[in-house]
Image 1: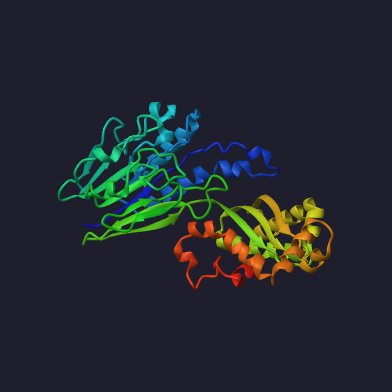
Image 2: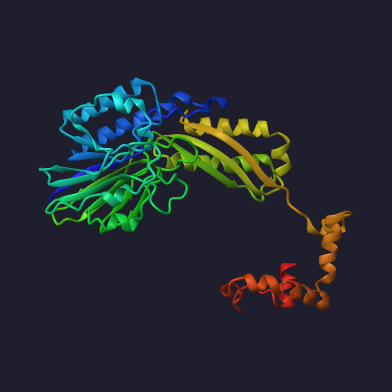
Length: 405
């Protein structure tokens, strides 16, 4: 059979993004409206691709968000899909379960929420698809919901829908925990997951298990292209899927190595080059950038003596390059001055004393052999693979100790 559908999750509509006020000049309205614009892009993509249906694997909302305008906006977008005959199938996630709007707003009749009491199967006639899912009855769902999902429906394309942390995703709260083996053992043809905000193909086939990521990055920890997954099933049953960007604002961290630069102006030129490349890679989207200068350089003292001046200059460069489409969220200087070891070795004080001591023992085999003896216990704890003859970490020879010194 021929089938195509959209798999999306973690929309977090109108995420409040608290804390933006502390950033001078932050485009707060643009950032807060980004999730709405991304949702509009999602709906437009579904209509343009003439998909059979859309799956939303949890977290439409962002916690107990009280503004009914948020829900009304969502309802209006779902109505656009209804006008073109596109049905939407949703499992509630941890954020939806704690949201009062979810419980009170009546959605258009093309929107179907799966039961939160037990796994539910919805069968479609054209195309022949069986969708299996269960939403969250409470925000902290800690049981393995997938374990009770039903057997696949014979003769149909079976899709499992679940909002889960999945084993191995330790950076996310372990809601609806389960393993890849738990999902694969169900015998479904595709698993549509949500909750993990980074796009991830957990399993390519037999069956594909996919996190589409969220549709719009909301802060500096959610970087890169954000969007949904467009899934196509060929007549021979082969499942193909692709990432479709939907974001209107993209977050990026630029760590710029300015090692060897002689003055601040030279370092700032490297920032200009890095910003130019980031703008080109953003594909016309508004860019929110965090910039860090690193490395050992003579420019260090110049940069640190007047950081406000250089931060202002970097922001001016961003405005020039980005044509009002770049916001520099933060600039940090993590450079270091170059070290002249010879001068330090001649200096008075503990550092000079230490360097002179190292120099004095380089040819003293008795002291070096003493080091080897001291390091015996450490050597016992190091894996054998690191102590092979081809490895530089040889704590049992005087030549190696000299090199380390």
